Image (cartoon, rainbow, N blue to C red; front, top):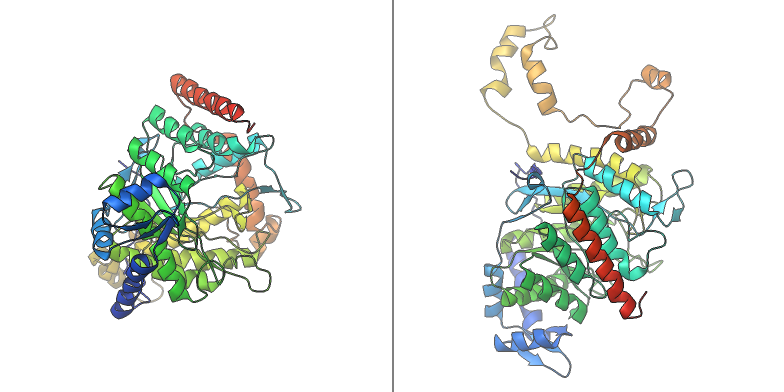
Length: 482
């Protein structure tokens, strides 16, 4: 038993030719062999040197032989299972299945003015309850739904949000790292016997900071999976060209893959592209720019070749409110990602960049994801769906299909019925108070909060989690960080 996700029954989108794929791969190997990566971690440098990498300890620069790179890519599993608190929510990564998760934000927004503000603890917990209830959310990412909440010391934000996810959802999740907080995240995973995926984030251009590598070592020693990701900005921390930024991002991630496979051969890894072009007018990342989708489609195509589960750039909009712009910006990025053959994609809940999130937006976005998922499932073609006998039976007008058993059986399987969209005729719309999808999503949020009760933690596990949080508080107080 595992989370179903959406099975892709159509051929993945490919925008590169075979020759172009080979060119990107050769260029990636060239960067790793001749330019190398700065890796600010002595233990990692020693490990890489023992495995035939050229290591400059003074500059912390590592150059990777192509044979080692190819060998480590082969060692990483192409499919693997990750354990959630409820086994029915386990994920099986790889193959033709895509899973969708919410896109977190630093803050919530005021539901009337749409101005950002810090979330309260209750709002963070309520947000998780809603994400737990939505049918097209298959997992929860780091910092979900917010980067902590009001009154929380910065060093406790990741441990507290990790605990909040455990307490308010049984869905699988991954987590970030900062100031050694992965120590306590790993302890929570061990206390519940679940697979919290840890992260190792490259810092473009071509750098792995010691904090990221130390998190990876700790996860490897605990037997937990790790996601390797990079977040370059094209024109700032990566080349402005889509092909060039694909090469640099590939090199940064593959360096992490090599290191992880040397730590523990066969280690479960997932990779993610988090690339944005730079808005050359403002200097900020150009959220929802079509270049994101072009870059992501290349990334997906390359990592399908490498056979390692992958996620694509989050569907963050530039819009600040749930409006038409917000809808099309998210839809384009999410749809291209799904068509490209990616395995994990973040969509639901984000309003602007990685800065704001709201449950109402997550509810609206869940309909978008449901529509994408239905498209990926494709069309079933067999004797029953071709319906030749039925067509012959009904014949021309005045024949009709509405009253037929075939229609009653198939219409729900063939259509996707949205939860909160305005699908009424004009007379019905006016009679119902001229409500928009935003109105329906607000009503749905209240309904979920009134009726959905996430599976509570057993008493002993709750004690274990609270003790780990208390240990974390003591740890940071002793360091003078609280």
